Length: 274
Image 1 (tube, rainbow, N blue to C red):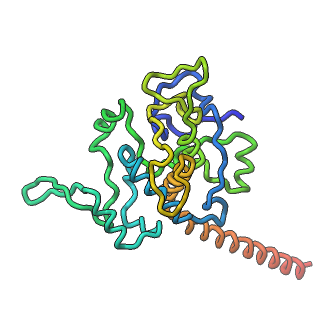
Image 2 (cartoon, rainbow, N blue to C red; image 1 turned 120 degrees about the vertical axis):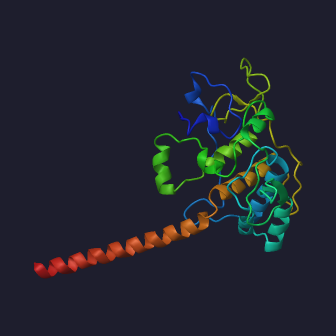
């Protein structure tokens, strides 16, 4: 099934590389549709998974990717207590000011602060990453996805499939492989057939088995890490998903009941007229 790029290539999950005349054919492989706890009209977040994903982000991803639109206080939605959130925030240095002398200064973070960017500016980020600026993770799970062609997208309307972003992120994180024979990739890049912007990307495989310890006994594998951090990114992009789905169900129920009452009223009115 032929798939098309979603969004601008410059905002891809990995570090965007060279484009070609056949760029519209990427990704070469279609991401697998996975089962997530937040799928469907009654889906909810698995807080244990979100906490594991946050741990993967902090220990692996945060050195390059920011969460500029996420406040520390929202971590309570992941099941952390107010004291735990305060302790997490204090681990970060936040630029503040100016002070009375007109100078900026650093202070410990508070729950009302937002996650600081790992780099001071895009130029510094590019200089540290082979000329490419790592994208911010705040909205990436909603912004990056592979569009599904006809007739799949028609079925998605009825199944309410909205997880193409996390499916893509998971596929990308687990999809690194050696390039096939006869396929050349630019030096310093890594072949990944799931990348939507080209045949390879500058981001090296970020995950490996056993690199992040889990206290709850979950598998410490690339597969599990990828699932957990993808779910965490979905929460970062849509923290009010559960409330939205609950409200949507209530509204749909109201519309069904209201439609039934309108129909019965119509039958009553016209039966008397005749």
